[in-house]
Amino acid sequence: SNGNSAVSLTQIADKAMSEQSNILDTIKTKLVQAATDTTSDQGREAIGKDVSKLLDQLNNIASQTNYNGTTLLQGASAGAAASSLTFQMGETDADTIKTTAGVQANVAGLTLSGLKASADAGFTSAGSARSLMKNVDSAINTLNGWRADFGSTQNQLESAIRNQMTQQTNIKSAESVIRDVDYAQESANFNKQNIISQAGTYAMSQANSIQQNVLRLLQ
Image 1 (cartoon, rainbow, N blue to C red):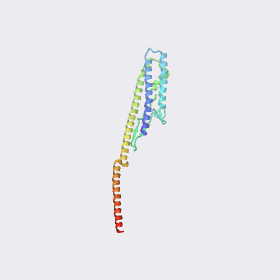
Image 2 (cartoon, one colour):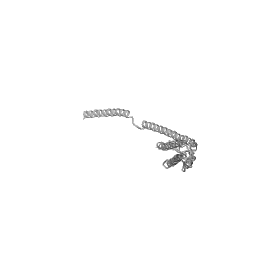
Image 3 (cartoon, one colour):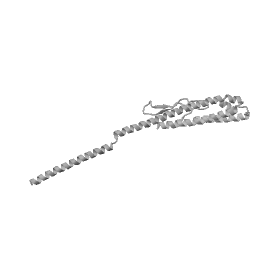
Image 4 (cartoon, rainbow, N blue to C red):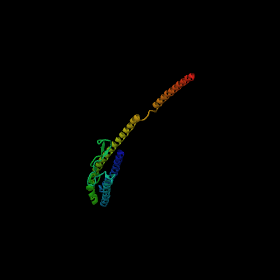
């Protein structure tokens, strides 16, 4: 049960970061549009507004993604990274699986504060937009790294679940050998004892018959 809950948690985090990845891809596309001189100043200003809104949504996803109240993509505040989470996967204190600490999938954590400020002000030139493209590339790489960490944790959890299920099956099988009756053997023993019992009853009846015959002769 712990393992399945933990898998659900990692899936929630992965789906949220997948949407954030889509946002960053869209921002990169818009920066490419703003970085060419065929785009007017008014067009770059409009693109800046779009980028600003997309970054706001990036922050919203980071703050809202949680499992039972525990935020997964940032800490308790936007300026803090998420702590490592520990999942109990066995009967001893050493049987645990942990997530990677340090996830902060928001504008601050992805080092996109400069992009946000430029977008809020409106991109002033193609060159200013072009200079910010590498920041988005870096953010995409960082986000992909965190997604890979969650994916690795999910694989580890699923492997632990399969192992637990195998152990459970083996324990039940061993218990069955100890507790359950071997019906074939017990049926054979029953028949054997029944035959012996019937033979004994017959012998006793014959003995009683002989005694009765002797008594008749004596009378």
